[in-house]
Length: 123
Image 1 (cartoon, rainbow, N blue to C red):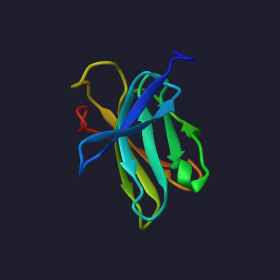
Image 2 (cartoon, rainbow, N blue to C red; image 1 turned 45 degrees about the vertical axis):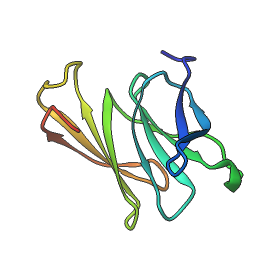
Image 3 (tube, one colour; image 1 turned 90 degrees about the vertical axis):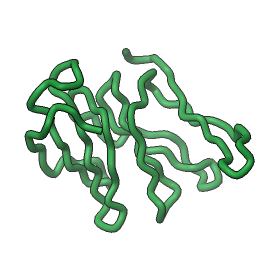
Image 4 (cartoon, helix red, strand yellow; image 1 turned 180 degrees about the vertical axis):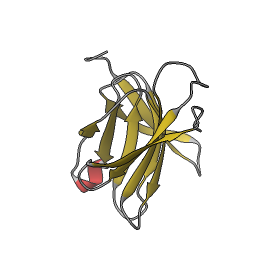
């Protein structure tokens, strides 16, 4: 639902202490993939069917939406070398609905490169 906010909490894994959070324009951030080569992190927003890109505050960045592409994104993986995002999604609600979709996106501009049928249950 537009206007609904959610967050990604950041924890220092060495100390176990809370560091901060990143607010996103969706109450259902479903999957995320940090880019180990940059300050970016890609987040699928399940409620609004978008992929958001966040940048660390140290890099002077903020949240922005890379693309609004399709229904019910659920899982996300990043090929940092080739700058490709692989987004697993469902066509209808329900974890085992078949077919699902695997969306391949250009991580630099959010352009959808391909969309192929996949198993309905992505993790």
